[in-house]
Length: 152
Image (cartoon, rainbow, N blue to C red; front, side, top):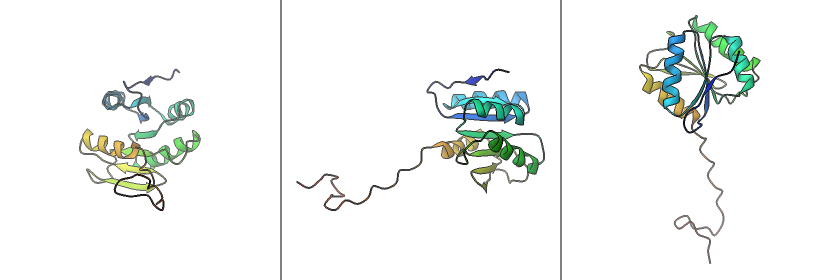
């Protein structure tokens, strides 16, 4: 079983898509690579674990045809079994338990969303994968905030 990572032109963040329906998996790969992400795709929990161990993803995107509680359990097991850091966001989507267009944080960087369209999912992923905002620089006595120059 070879790992096939689809490379986006700019080598962006790697998203591991776990989707059991081939057609949906192919569509997600195409859309995400078009947005500049690298994509690796898995059909099952075991396949996802192997792929995540070989190449650590920046985000795990899970969409499986199962009951919400089972999908959440599978996603958490993938992260645990692959020994992914808790900072790696896990996004579960198209779960009927969540209202259309909503996002719900389940804690430990695990989110459930049911986007109305791909643009909503796109914005949510961009928000999760954007670099963290840097801490404000400590105030240095004598530094002018208006000119950002050291006093002479």
